[in-house]
Length: 512
Image (cartoon, rainbow, N blue to C red; front, side):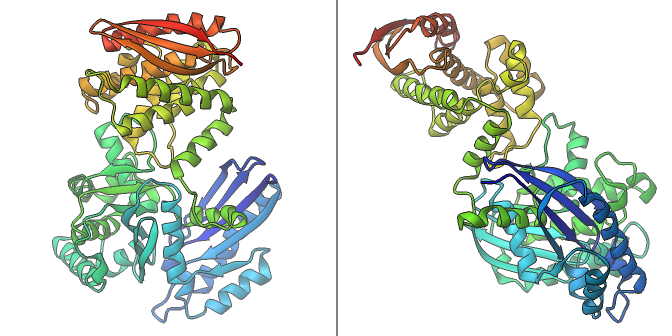
């Protein structure tokens, strides 16, 4: 695969964005530029459903700004799309002709189905959620989808968005009681037209600025200790509490709320209403935020097309691959830690006082993939850097609690260090759960010691004796095992403390 850069122009009804993704030769990708202009194209649509000349000039001016930027990048492909504001304009052909004549960009207008599809594609390629309803609230349209087993089952685009709801139902900046009633009645009637939405009892996933702003306000409100919005979860009550908090404020005060974008403060409340009514309609109690949306869906389509697939086979595995490449990890070494930890965990499972679930075994494998990730930042503080890196970036396919668990495991150094890291999260994790994390972390650290020279000396592990006070383990190896023996005997104390047993390691050389 050749290294290349892909540009995406997303011309929405509220904002126009230009995003550049870089893809290296190993298939590792990242966003390198994200520019936004709050154009509010929907406000330039007349009662006759035509876009004014002023609105067209806003588009051309915005694209000229983007054009001035692209010369500093080596883009191999640019995909430009427009959504509801241009799609529904009676003078759509005139708008596209002006873009074609006066800019170097080719902009295609997405159909309602295509707009919904790309949002679905973004979510199913960046989360571990197999069944859900999605809502993408734009300025002039709202896309709803329902997917099951990662397959799109239904989609629909409503001709209303945060901007148009505000324009239609709210005279000033904050809805009155009667205006709230009218908005909610309208939304309920609209959702009632889709029988496949009713009572699904699955998570509702929010895409776009409204969803992100709700989550950011909530995180600031509760002093959330973990970074990242992607796959952040809120309850129905949480969403209602943010709506109530923002509704009680004047526009001037709303604009100063931490987490709420100033250019969205006047339209956030109708947007929240659309989400609340959908949660109610679907009989759901879980609202999940996706930080990936339409433009990410477009990017995934371009990225995966040469492989003739639409989805990553496993989102979480792909994420750990991306982390490994990004931080230049020794993939063979990480894989060996994973193999040895599997041996170890399976040998310990028969013990009466060890309760490792299948999910725990999965967490051990994930933790092995990035164990001491922070070594690449600085060896002396590899534990601290590992924990910081993994708690301060989203990992596609992992919930926030799973990401915290992996951060604990990949950074495990000692019981005391674990407790210090866990202090800000004490309301998230019980003492029993933390003890289980300590056990898993101790297994990983011991297995890390068993491959400390990165030569795959240790081949397998067997438990040969188990009593109330002692565990004997046979470590089979080939080659000079000096360093592995030294470190394993040093690190076994963490597992002894966790199991409350002594551990004796016997190193046995195998014939070649």
